[in-house]
Length: 284
Image 1: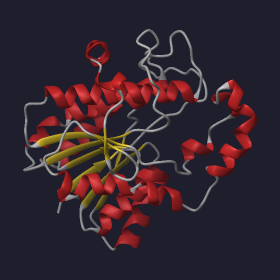
Image 2: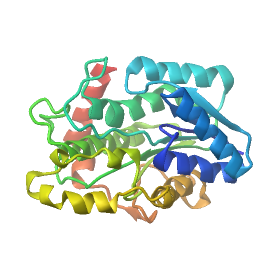
Image 3: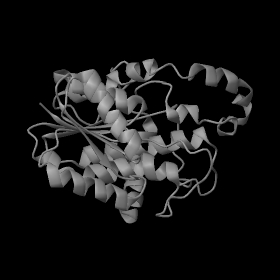
Image 4: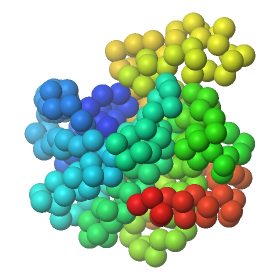
């Protein structure tokens, strides 16, 4: 039995990931900000999986204090963490700052998974074989705009969301290259498109101008389907968390079919990843 922590798992892909892993008999810890929806998710996962070893940790991980609170709660109850799934994400529909003064997409998509991983490092080190899995989302831009890391100069909806996810990839790839603890693997996976609360909140203004006439088609593709697409999208995370085929493999990127693919050149570019690394270090 593995101890598995999944961020943002009270709904969507995270919840379906938690359910599938619970059915396999693992100890599942989900995180969320809302107590009511969190407790409802726990009960639903328990009932559908027959696994009572499910727990909710409440924290606002869009801010640094919230990430630290989550880690403190985890450390009070557990010593070892076998799998960390950085599932939580943000696709803000406008330029908004968190209480830390950071752009929301950057805070949740870039800073949070990195900071949470680092703060839980000692717990991961105690596992015989620990896995850190971070979810990619959206299209892969060809470049990373180092002059617009927090949308200081331009916020263009889903384009910036994809930029923030590319920053995350570069940051976690750099972490995998710097990691000297061989029992911890760090990988990225793309779950594929799914109907979630995030996609439901996309507005026409978040699309590139020329694509806005196609918004009705986009909404049709991500319409509520009762969790079917989220369940399908969760398969990549479940595979990455449990499959012996990825045991010991690190610094890799897997697509929605859980096939290993090369990272985009912008992610492995030494200037990009080290610039983002240094930038995040200064923030934390």
